[in-house]
Image 1 (cartoon, rainbow, N blue to C red):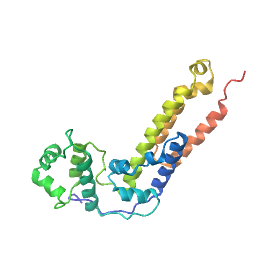
Image 2 (cartoon, one colour; image 1 turned 90 degrees about the vertical axis):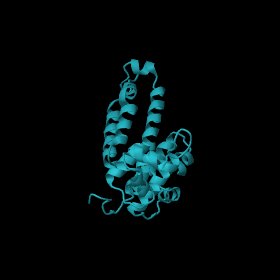
Image 3 (spheres, one colour; image 1 turned 90 degrees about the horizontal axis):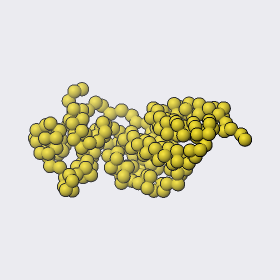
Image 4 (spheres, one colour; image 1 turned 135 degrees about the horizontal axis):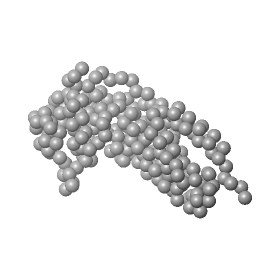
Length: 222
């Protein structure tokens, strides 16, 4: 199908549940306020999912799934309300049209729901508003999962910086293999790369490997 979206498919919430658990555990280890980490408004703006749906999905309850046209209109409306001009005003239909490379009539028809968008329309509008690919089209649970994974990556970066600061330079320079591992790649490299892996199965393999490595690399005993 070239004009409009393909047919909707079923959505699994298992990846979302696993991501919520990881983010909550990581935030807890860092002493972060979970109400801030899981702030409904922030997650709504990051994902495009309405706040009431974000709350329902975070609670592990089914929220239903709007049809693709409704989802597109919800996300586009959120973009127009939250991604505004430096003066605080919304972008006009003409400005969106010019930025997305379409006519004002096309932009107006999309904004008003009088025309079904193509993937090309979505890509152009996403580029104009500076959001990631799929923002206008992803299923609600997938969109929220993606937003939480970006939160997880930021937490891992913060955790890496904190852990790096706690490794004494003297220990790393003294030949202590465990300190050197942490200083050079342990937290910063391994944790960050693990966050990029596509599934929990892959992350479990990294955890297993790291456990074995740390078991074999003991600090020097005096």
